[in-house]
Amino acid sequence: MAHYAEFYDLRHVLILGRVTSGEGGRIVQAGAEKVLKEEFPELAIGLHLPEEEAERRVGQAIAAGKPAGDRKEGGMKMRFSNPSAEIFVPDARSIEEALGRTTHLAVAAHQDDVEIMAFHGILECFGREDRGFAAVVVTDGRGSPRDGIYADYTDEQMREVRRREQKKAAVVGEYAALVLLDHPSGIVKDPAAREPLEDLKEVFMATAPRIVYTHNLADKHDTHVAVAIRTIRALRELPPEKRPEKVLGCEVWRDLDWMPDEDKVALRVDGRDNLAAALLGVFDSQICGGKRYDLATLGRRRAHATYHATHGVDEVEGLTLAMDLTPLIRAPEESIRGYVVSFIQRFAAEVEERLRRLDVE
Image 1: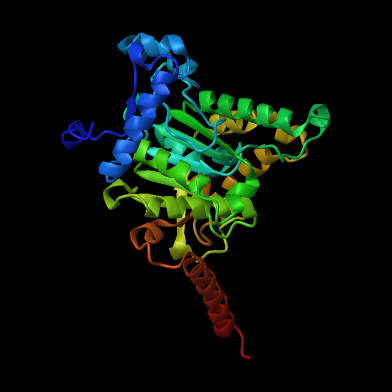
Image 2: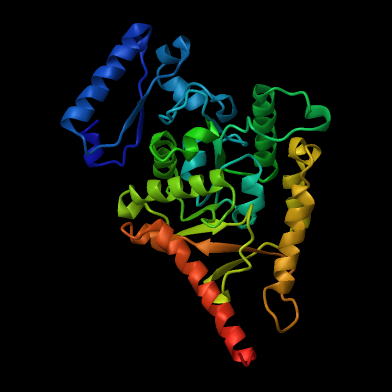
């Protein structure tokens, strides 16, 4: 493998063959991983075994023949820290092809955050063969509010409901892939926990997206901000050539219309209201749970389109606003906290200057 790595960009290797049956496969995997770690530490190659014994023995046939939609287990899996993590591919492509065609990637805290904050990326890739939108949902959805038919659901039942809903959205939106990391929110919010960060690095290395959408750092939801921070820190640990061209912090639990216009990234999201409504509508557990995210999200996009500019007629019918987080990736030494505070300071200075101009005090 080390020799082949001189010629090919190896990220994952699938171990197959009769010798890998039974405990032998784990011994081969452990031995190879030990050699790679001790003698070739610069190589980030993941070694993988199909979990079903029959699949190990049939060699190359399993790599070529099993449909992507059946490959939650088996096949070429990334090495996630959580055994319940899952990669879902809505179409007939292999996981490798699905991740490899990703150009736009959203990293969100919860199921339905993707559809609220990263609709721009979904639209950019919808119906396109030359682009692919993929999504990562970091948490497990157990703590979701519930009402109506879901009122008596246990946390585990809600977790399953929310996974199904997110997969439905991936089908409707024609996502290239959906990655469900399934972490508890407490782990994500723990600054000392490396697991979510390491999982995100695995995804970034496998997808190499041009644009990453995540939560904005001024969001008022702790888990959202934690996911944004883990995203930034994971991207900072990538080799410079693997980092995306653009990283955008988007709106869910705090609008960004307070930012000075020169700091806003305005993303056009009109022309597909039917698709937007369909994506948000599949999250029935949240709508029935008392939160009309579907109506509120569409209303916010229309409001931004109208109120974005104080003079002139509306030029678009839907906008989402984003905070440009790219400088935090290009300058890893810059303080995340200081960067966000600088936006707030510019906003305060703009308000103060306007009051000074218009008042005699």
